[in-house]
Image (cartoon, rainbow, N blue to C red; front, side, top):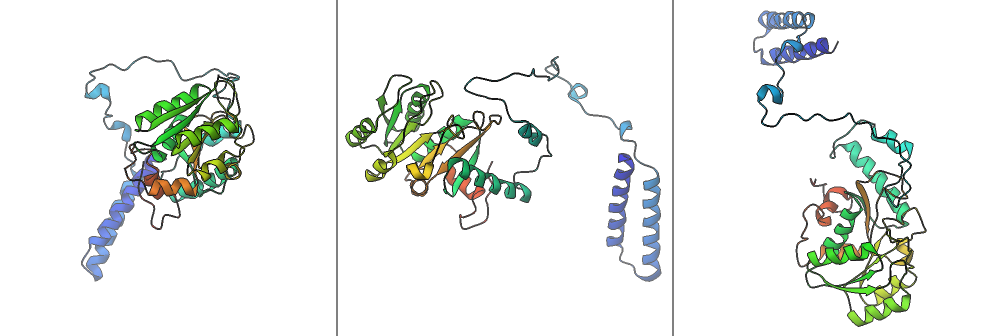
Length: 318
């Protein structure tokens, strides 16, 4: 059946080509059309035997490295009870088996707008720039640091677990001047401690881990957003573990940049990372004095591809 369809399609193309190139009119034109039609019918009745054609493989072409012998992909069923990844919901597995579409397909762009709206709900924000980053939660973390930090910026970071230290490492790589607030693992910072550090170090950006994966400690944000606005500081929140797991309100708490992961309370596989920038964050991004030092995670470029309010057509990225 497939071979016959292939042959008919080829015949139709030939018929169309013959008809479009015919320049004679009247009887000659009709004869030309009849000949083409007869040829098309003959091709349709004799499908091409694709199996008779040589198949090109690395073995035929010549292998420098032999193909390895591996087991079939049949992962065991596990109950995942660690801090992440967790078990994905069966509906997620079902969705992953649906047909693939291209990243410039109109249907993809339509679906992307739905996902952005749902992420705004998950973050409890009206931020226009709320998107899924192509990568794990660490990619969205780096997106925050790379886009919000410029060389020489004082970067105040709350370190009370593993991921505060990762923010310090990333900040150094992007030219920040990291300053840390320290608490024993499992403890959180008081508002007074944060206020004292902001007034003392006068940072451009403050980063706090909302829910520290390594310990489960949940950092209160009461008053922190207002404090940051008073001192002209951008506030970043690590929400990888907290999103959909504990209450999270970006707008109410005055958080300017937040990132999360899908493999924990959202019950999805890793590989897509929610990210949200406030208007204050977007203003800093769009008025940077230096180019974002990460091409793939440059949110100015992503905004022109994934956004709808950039004033022009979507540009190509990824």
